[in-house]
Image (tube, rainbow, N blue to C red; front, side, top):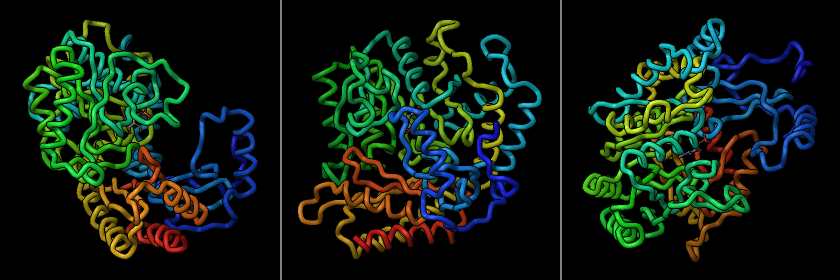
Length: 452
Ligand SMILES: Cc1ncc(COP(=O)(O)O)c(C=O)c1O
């Protein structure tokens, strides 16, 4: 059975797709409607979707749907297609590996590409100490394994996460995640020995980094006790929680306290990793060297792959056979990762993310200067956001963020919301997007804001 019958006009994805916003129907068009009706019948409502179209191709800075509509992509499938969807080097690597072998299970018959990915991660992640990496399938699985490793290394059980943190949807990572709806509500009980403290949210708490760290550390000391604490898990720039950039000094102070107290500092860079923030890792921006770092999303340009990388002596705490999984480090995903890592390192993607930041920041700050409903423009690299507030009270305005996102999507621009209060619009374009499309996407968002 053909899954999508788009006939001979089915576009080939990748950077060769025409780079333009072009709507030939209202969204969703008739073909997308048909497919989405099948989705509603066959897939539970718990698996939601943001953009009401069925994708058939993507590349550069666009996503093309089953009706031939071409949408500007300011979301990268939630920060995944950083090198661009169907990047030619990645496609070639996937095809070559798929023709060789698709699976042996690394725990049964190991293969070189997994080891090469681990070597690359050990080299690229912050710090020049001896490191090791283990590969998994998803960001949540990486975070789970980082916690397992930290517990085994320290012999302690407690784990601390931050307000506004997001770490995934498995049982332990739901416990680590702050926001109840839609991630946790009704899905408990959650894993025990997880504690939450406030982090640093300059717009809301007005604290310096040092003061925010002192507040967090004091709460940890009082409510958990360093002797019981295996790990602190922190996103250096919080993603789903609202693209919150901590005040200078917050992360180094917490990392320092962890080091002094034998607590494993885990940086969750699942969203912020791999050039996304204008550095290879967001930890680099803040001058911190995490003990363990979790990665996924951008690592393999959309193939399911995730990793835990860290100090060799911590990574080796788990006994032989204690880590793994049937698919972790699948050879096709590893081939994609090696190609993507080559692009990150050698095709100037860190610099491209810095350029994207300049463009986004300039446009968004110009908007903020004339519209008091924008409480803050923040982020780094191609991970930027605006937080919408009620100008009179500074209260979060989720309805405005939702209305703007909906209007932009209807006009063919994919934007995502985030934030514990749902009042943030985030911009996560693929780094392959041309500048004129970025400008056009922002024009549409600006018009949506002006119309409200
Ligand atoms: C910081 C962070 N950690 C973990 C996850 C979970 O990753 P996955 O959805 O691949 O399980 C995400 C996903 O958005 C994330 O942003």
